[in-house]
Image 1 (cartoon, rainbow, N blue to C red):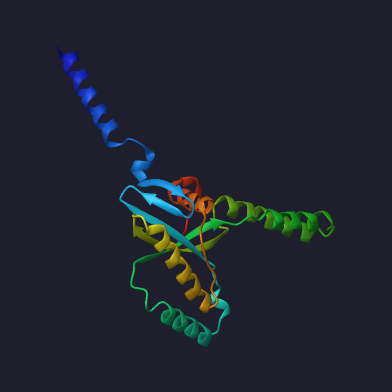
Image 2 (image 1 turned 135 degrees about the vertical axis):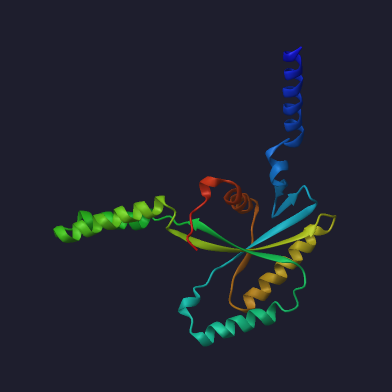
Length: 197
């Protein structure tokens, strides 16, 4: 009798879990990624635009103010929601390491060799800790999924590209491969990097 009650109890628990979590896709909310769009279970179609970053520390204060004013005036008529997202991504440093190794092989000065070895070791440690990365910026726009949502998102993407281009900033709509990579960086802990900010 007791074993039958316990069996039914466990059967109910596992049945509930199976009902609650059917697939990974339902858990994260992504129905499909096709062409330039992400389709969600909530009925939205999402487009992501990559913003070419600029180093504002190289600009004078006047240039920064001009850039802010230009962007503000170009985006003033934007009334629909958009999200700005910054994502760190790893930088491939193999060419830089190869160059240091070549210099190391051709150097006979012991102090220079020691400094180059220390630099290589420091780079390896920083690379493994995720400290060597660049920041990528994205604009995320969405529409309720219907027959015209892809056309409307494409039209809005082109308009945003033009507005940013007027300010000297390049913006591009991500394709399917890039969308998968961005989604993977959100969901895969192996892509995560530590940040102190």
